[in-house]
Image (tube, rainbow, N blue to C red):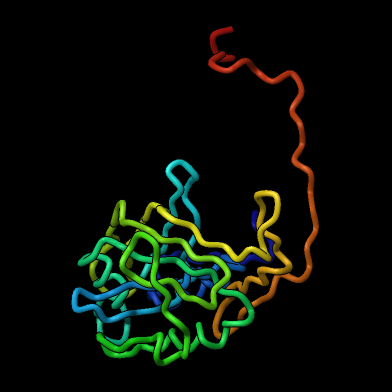
Length: 221
């Protein structure tokens, strides 16, 4: 028996309420600040909090733009990636949080969010979309896979890209590691809320004694 819990059948509530449950429960979420370019050469810049890493070989990341509830259309970011097969993920630090939020507005297709937010596009090394100069970390990506989860409001498309070039500010990188208190990343919560990484604690991973040899199946004994 689950005491003091509300049980919810997700099939019996609206997609808007399911969305609120997700973003209020999966917290904090990292923000992928994605820059793309249209076939006509117009820049686009938008934040996504359904974002994470996939693996390191090949180095890859994913994010999920959802179909807009306001008009049932794909996000401009997804339109551009489908056309060009390239994008850049920029990491959001406290210093550019306000500009990132400005880019979350639903501008008409063809509006350059770099101009709207006063952020600076800088030429990438390999891909055509620009990196955000003010961001302390940038990942140039080439499209690997698109996984479509329907085609109506509330549905989304998982975008998986290979990181083909990585940019990191010298002052936040030491001994192969990112210095967190200098990166000052911003996390996404529910509603209009965000968070800073200011309270950190460590837990050492436990060591397992008498590990089973690789390939050995205990059911064979």
